[in-house]
Structure formats: C-alpha cells, structure tokens
Length: 333
Image 1 (cartoon, rainbow, N blue to C red):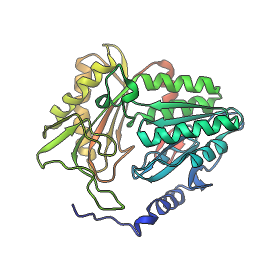
Image 2: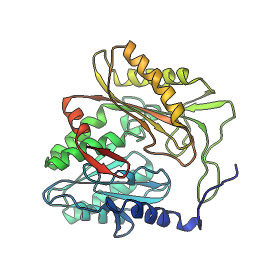
Image 3: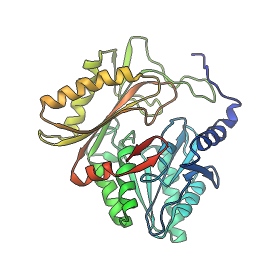
Image 4: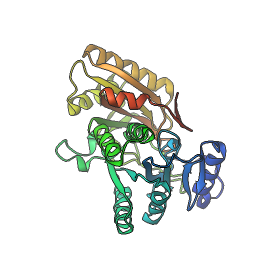
C-alpha cells in the first residue's frame, strides 16, 4: 500500500500533532510540561484529578477528551506506543488538586507496563493515586480471565462517568468505585475490513483479502479471532451484537449504552446502517437502548472497520453520563 498523508518529517509527527491540536482548541486544552495535554482551565481545588495515557495515532482518542467533566490530563506517547513512566508521574503530580488522582489505563502491554511503573513511583512519593484498568474486548480473553482482555473504546464511558463524579466532588474512592462499576458492565468487539498504514514508516499494519473481514481485531491491528468472507451490514451487526449480549448476560428490560466507533476510514453511512440493525435486534429482545453514540472516538489512521460497544446502565451511571462536560470531541450541556 502506498502511503499518502499530509505530514512533514516523520520524526516530528507527534510534536506537530499536539501543537496543532492544542492550538485548534486553545480555549479547552494546552500543552504543558513534557508534552502533556492538560485542561486550559484547571479543575477546582479539592476535586479528584483524572489522568490517562496512550499512544498517538488514534485521534481523537485519548487527548480529545481532556476538558471539563472528563479528563484533566492525557499523556500521549509516540505513534502506537505508550509514553514512559516519568511523564505519567509528572501528569499525576500536575493533576493533584488536593483529593487524589484516578489513573485510567487501557489494557495493552506497553500501557500497563508504563502504568505499573508509574504507580510504584507515585507510591514512593506518597501521592494519592488509584488505577483503573479497562479491559472489555471479548475477543481477547474469556469471561473467567478478564485480565487478558484488551481495552478498546470502553475508555470513553469510564472517562465520562468518572469525570462527572469527580467534577461533583466525589472522593477518590467514590470515583474509583463508579469507574469500576462502569468497567465491569461493558463489553466491546471490533471488526476490520481494510488495513491502516503506520504514518511514520508507511508500512501496512496487517493484511486482509479484498473480500475478507476479521472479527476481534485489536486497536493496533492485533489479529482477531475469526477471519471470514465480507458480510452485509445486517449480518455483521448480528455476528457482533449477539456474543456481546451473551457475554454481558443482558436480560430483557435492561438499559444499554450502545457505541459504534469507526476505526478511521469507515463512513457514517455504513455505521448508521449497522446501527439500524443493532437497534432492531435490541427492540426485538425488549432491551432498551438508553443512550447511543455513533462516530469516531478512537481510530487507527485509515483502518476500515468499527468497534461495537455495549454497557449496562443503571440510574446513577445514566445520570453521570448525562452530566455536563466540555471537551474538544465530546460536549454535554
């Protein structure tokens, strides 16, 4: 595949990306310290801070959700690579407003390694930090071993409800409990139909035949669990939704948040056609679609495909989901 991208020098990708992003949304975010994306207007003193980390190249995730009601600081790594522990520790120090910090980490090997080292350093300094690991990808581990499951777009509802609780003045333990409840009640499954290229090297991340799709693909092109001939939108919706419902053991009468997250090159037209069938299936099963999002929240360059996410919601989680927030890529009034 020939890479065609509007970039300058590959070695300057992340720096220029962050400069452009924070300049475009200067009223909400700014660069501080060692390439940290932070809220332009800091959270009030006495509120829990929320920090995350992750590789660049997945925009708008994760830095797109720094702002009032969600994240305080994002620590972006290089393209598809975790940042080091010293920068994460710097972010935690900066996010401390007198009530401790929640550290939200997606379950990928590099991210977890950096996060664990960060927690050790934070403990030595006596910082008040609790970590929550998101691991909701049902394709990468069975229900009895959730620690093996990858973190995909499920970071989004965790940021949202934890951020809302922190903004309201909840304690660190209370914010962690909310984040944990959200995390335990969500599931994601991804599908890919075309590869992406690494923007620094131009190399294809994986290969698929012209008439193939792969269910269970990871965020960075990690191999999925089932390669098959390309299916229709309705067939794909059924292939993905049914195992999600079974894994979460969703019952008739329950309320779900449903997110369809485009991988970068899949159009909104396609996503809405898929969602149409998802909605039909849930209606038939008497499962309420309580809240929905259809769009791009974490991508992999021009990879084609999407992630289907469901989360069981209760009254408190719905209230926190609906709470105001103001970030560059998600706003609730």
